[in-house]
Figure 1 (spheres, one colour):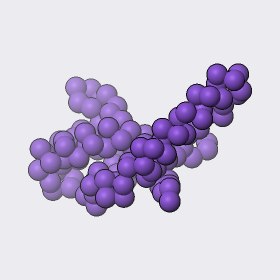
Figure 2 (tube, helix red, strand yellow; figure 1 turned 60 degrees about the vertical axis):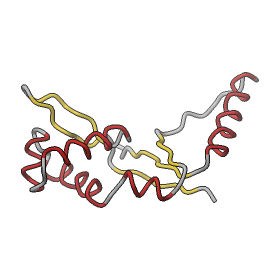
Figure 3 (spheres, rainbow, N blue to C red; figure 1 turned 60 degrees about the horizontal axis):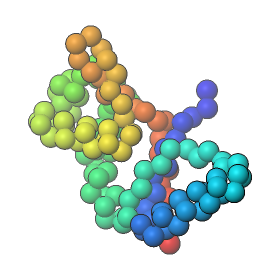
Length: 122
């Protein structure tokens, strides 16, 4: 099975709007638009660093390796406070890097992708 990656981009609002405009113009002209892999964008490297902290990156590794059956188990594995883990999981969910898989009465965090690529526009 082919590895599934998510692209995370760092580019300005103007660059994003320009790309969207080009795609919409192509659709209006009836051109076939190539479907791209899923993306998540930040407007600065600092915003990216605030979202994907070392702790959150470490959580991705733990989720992949240990496959915890719940957020509570993830907190226990990492020896971290449940409230902080929940906040970090919410950010990773918002970035679409993980998903929650139903396991009985609980939900288990699972990686949504095999990895991600970081693209920085200059």
